[in-house]
Length: 181
Image (cartoon, rainbow, N blue to C red; front, top):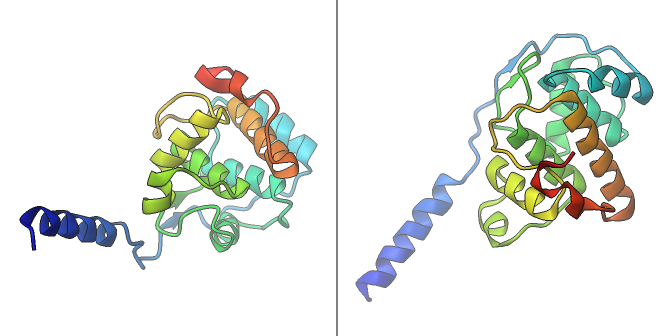
C-alpha cells in the first residue's frame, strides 16, 4: 500500500474515534432550581428585557416552542431536551449561566431538524458548525460560539424556529444575515 493512503486512512480513523460522544454523565448545577410555569406571552414579555438569557430561561423557551409539557425543575427540563436530542448529552449545565450563541445554534439546528453540509454530515452537529450553517442560512446573526445571547436576540431566534417548524422556511431570513435582528 502506498504511504499516503495509509497516512490518510489513519488520520481519518483517529478523527472519527475522537468525535465519539462520551458516556460521562454531564454536570447539572442548579438542577433542583424550580422553573415557574408561565404562558408564552408572559415568558416572551419577561425575556425581552434581559441583557443575557440564562440556560434555564433558554431551555424554558425552547420547550415552549416545541410545545413540550412544562417541567418543574431545571434538571427535568435538561433530561427532556436530551431525550429529544435538542441538547447534547455531554454538555455541562448551570441554570443561571448565560447561554452562548453556540448552544443556541445547536438547539436551533436540532429543533428545526435541519440537515447541513458535508462537515455536519461527517462529524455530526457541533456548536461551531451549527452556528456556521445557521448563519449561512440567515437564521442567526453573526457572532462566535461563546458570545452570550440577549433577550431580544433570543426572542427573534425563537420566532424563527417556530416559523421554520410550521412552514419549512423563514420569510426574509436572508435579511437577518450580517447581524440584523
